[in-house]
Structure formats: structure tokens, C-alpha cells
Image (cartoon, rainbow, N blue to C red; front, side):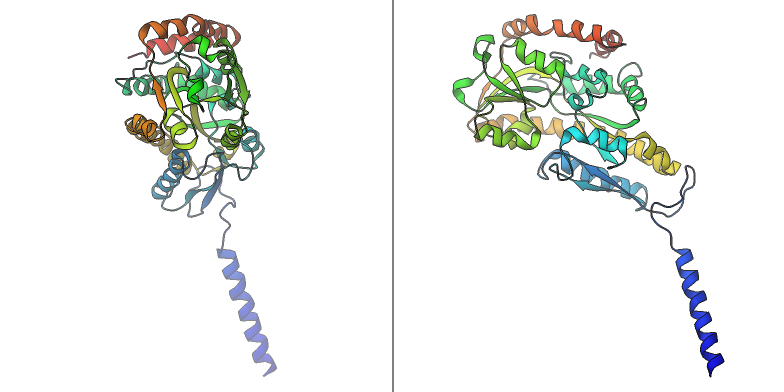
Length: 352
């Protein structure tokens, strides 16, 4: 009987050892080029509420990754600054605290001033009658070897892999009181306008005679209620959907660009087939957002009416007055950034 129990015990140990040996962690031992059934979940942090298109689009991104990888690759998304403020996301990606983020170009400018290109006013083609012109021009620049690809390559030198450069409408001016509606330089004078950061954007607001006030995206509504700001720079759909604004002035103040990014080191640690899927999905993500945001432009005037927000669309002559004080910032930026003039030239080369 004693021998029988010894034999059973040995058999159980062998079975357990075999089972544990066949199990493998989702992050264990998969060097580049080694494709297998391991699962990878990338941790993503961002500052936007779950009701925004930014968050919903990331969910779309995750679904696409799961589909294309047969469930091997997905995102674990933390919205509304749950993990950290937006200003800390880039360093957290580099340090390996999170795997992915969607910072805007003004924040990325703190790592590399080349991203401040997108803060320049009156940069891309625009038309209130045909919103698609802006999207076509900016996408052409993103996809250009002498434009967006240069910016992506620069980012890799900082340890950041850009998977997608995406866009909303150009950023415009909004105020929280009809008494503060901006129609010309005089009406902008002295107003406290919220910005997300960025040297060029601050200078642009100052040139209008207003006071740039840096406020995190998660604190804008509170700042409005407390009277910290009189207005803000934002895209129409986002401002009208999320903030208590009462006026909307259509001036192309800047061109916030959303970059879906991860650390270059993390990207290169993944199997090659998953790297390919990430790159392909990043391209699809950009096209997807172009369609979504362009479709939303049709609802902007409706949203404004629902919020009882007054709209102001400057005439060509009024735009020329704004351009007179704002266009010099193009040359100023180009002189401070290596290759800046070449990028501005490419903006012109890709103009529709």
C-alpha cells in the first residue's frame, strides 16, 4: 500500500510539472520575429472623458487590433486622467509606466519643438463652406515624406514611435459669455483664454491682445465656473459638446494634432507580425478619424443653436486683419527649429 501511494504521488508531481511548463505569461520571452499565441495588452492613459470621440476612437483602435491579431493584441484604456495628468504621459511612456498615449501636439512640443508647427495660425487650407479642404490638406501633409514622415522620424530619436497622426477641425475661439464675443482685435483685448500649453500658441493669444491661461483638459469646466478663464481655444465639436460656452468665433488659431504613440523600445520588443498590425491599424485609425470628425462638422451649427451659442464667421477682409498680425509667427517658428522652413514649404507643396 505504501508503494502504491508513492507511485501516485510521483505521477501527480509529473502531471503538475507538465501543466505548469506548458503555461506561458502573456509578456514572456517573445523576441521580435517570434510569432506565437501569446497575448499582449497595452496600457493606455489619456485625459478625455469616456463620452468623447477620443476615448471612443481608442476603443475602436483596440477592437481593430484584436480582430487583426486574432485576440493576441489589445488595449487597456484609462480615461479622464485616472493614471496621471496629460502633461506626464509622454515621460511615462518613455519610462515604461504606460505603453501608449494620445498626447496633443502642444504637449509633444515640450519634447521636440518641431511639433509646435501645428500651433501656427492660418497654416492649412480652410473653408466654412467646404470643411473637407482642411482635412485633405492636413492629411496630405501627414502622409508626405517631407512632412509628417519627417516629424515621425524625429520622434523616434526621442524614443517615441508614432503610430498615427490624427486631426480634428482647426482650433477656434470660444467664450463663456455673450458679452465677450470676439469679433476683432479690440474685443479680444484682456480676455483670459485657456490654452493647453505651447509657446507658439501663447504668443498667438498674446498677439490678439488676450491673456493665455494654461489649464489642464480635466479642469476646464471648473475653471469656467470659478471665472478663471473667459474663453478657450478648442475645436468646435469638442467645445460645443463638453464646455459651457456661449460664443464661437471661426478663426484658424491652430491645428491641434493627436498623436497615437508608444515607446520605441516597447514597440520593438513585440513580435514582428504585431508590429506590422500596430502600424497598419495606426494608418486606418487616421483615416477613420478623418471621416468621423468631418461628419461631425455637419452638426456643429446645430449644437451651437442647441446651446444658445452665437456664431461669428469673419469676412475675408476681417481674416486679412487677423493674418496681418498672426502670419509673421510662421517665419518666427521656422527660424527656431532645424528644418522648420522645409516643413513650411511642404505645407505649401501639399496645399490642394
